[in-house]
Image (cartoon, rainbow, N blue to C red; front, side, top):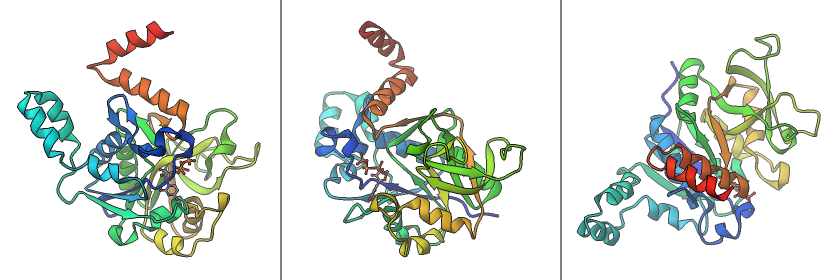
Length: 294
Ligand code: UTP
């Protein structure tokens, strides 16, 4: 039986150039989606999948992340004194549980593969999740919980994928699938045979892109240790996974839900609208406000 997935790596050391100038002084992962930072949703998704330890891979200027999950004694006592108990409860909900979070510095943004490698000592010798925090996923069963369930079923490595928008395959990592069903697909969970980072137009091996949730085996760390720089001069996680695929099983899970790329300005706007509309307490007011603007 495969080991349980208890830890998650959250790489948050990127510069967020696509969401400047907002990300100049606020880490992009701390930008608000409706009334809370992106990372609030991400940690909630992780907890719902059974994650007990979050390893943030941070860099310069990302201190706000650590502070957000810690106590703010003045604010908490002010809210208490003013009887704003609902707001206080909302603030306290996002506090880290004792020992639940670790922070490790990447020192230089050398790429996603390098960021994951920086977490190796804290992860140790067990399967772990990687969550790309700028990809927010709205789903009835949280996306990572779907991946953890798939891992419980088939073990090995799991990559969460979804259909790529028409004509955009060249912008993403695309997976190649095995031949189980006639077209290489068998339901939502399929054995993978390969993956390519940003394939040239017309050459994509499928229409499924790697969308930001992974379950990986610890053997990936030894590969990352000597992984040369790839696309964009960065140490790519995709390249290391392709090497590991020669030795271990990889399955692609087409998850049920919708992804919002919050690393992009329009994606951030879409996420703001979508997450407000998903919130029962504000959906009606949000709908009215949006309608009035259109
Ligand atoms: P992105 O390429 O989306 O993030 O990396 P970025 O570099 O911040 O974005 P732009 O293109 O400049 O706008 C995917 C994830 O990997 C993290 C990022 O923080 C993001 O969550 N990352 C990327 C690192 O932690 N370290 C790196 O060296 C690169």
